[in-house]
Image (cartoon, rainbow, N blue to C red; front, side, top):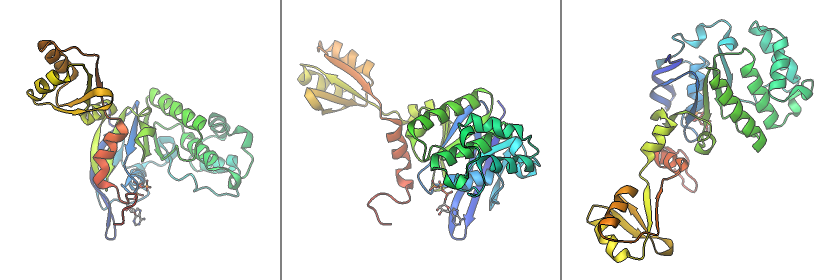
Length: 306
Ligand SMILES: Nc1ncnc2c1ncn2[C@@H]1O[C@H](COP(=O)(O)OP(=O)(O)OP(=O)(O)O)[C@@H](O)[C@H]1O
């Protein structure tokens, strides 16, 4: 498959701060890729480097094999929502999009199409200054869609959206990916990505932590435990520990077993003629796995002065 966005050994320093350090990953078409990291991890900086809005200290980024800056009609190639607040408040939604359309050789008819698509048709003539954050996010998404681009970047697009808005955006991302586009979406919350993304790029303090499918991330995070309920704990426990498992008592007389999978626990129970009333595998949530992986990289942890 073609790798549409390619990031190689990318480093960006601002004075003494290294926002991004030696970052390398690919974002593929036809998939939604979640770009995850705690606040300050370097997500916005990376997106700005992809768009050529900032210059890398070293390394390079290409979109379809070329730096994005080399594309004269940018919005037709890459659509981006970076900062929903970054709009002239005195303009109407329609004027804002018309200005963008004119600068990128896009017909005005497309403006009304995208306003309808994001649910802002009825407020198209209202001043953006009076828009809620959620409406601004929708306008930013409309701007990203304006050039009908094959590559779309969204920086924290779910901020400020109500639950209906979140559901709509998720559906939109899935549809854009199903159309074969490359969809790269940043968030600092795994919960926002786990039902949306196919692939993940996870960073912490500017460095790559993981770049893989969501399924692979979930499997690697693994390390699940097995919960067992039995009237014969006194027999089962030593047979499990003899096989290298660690066993701790849980609620309601249950045993929490780690180090063996459920199949092996079941086999040992049978061998020792132990009756089981329950045998379940519990996997940690993706949010727990994400927090564990990035724990060392959180810049400002709650209640901690650093
Ligand atoms: N223009 C700048 N000048 C100086 N430092 C900067 C600048 N832009 C970003 N940084 C620093 O670079 C680091 C990464 O910031 P960045 O905004 O890319 O992170 P982020 O992952 O997008 O975080 P957030 O979710 O909080 O926006 C931070 O330490 C930030 O303070």
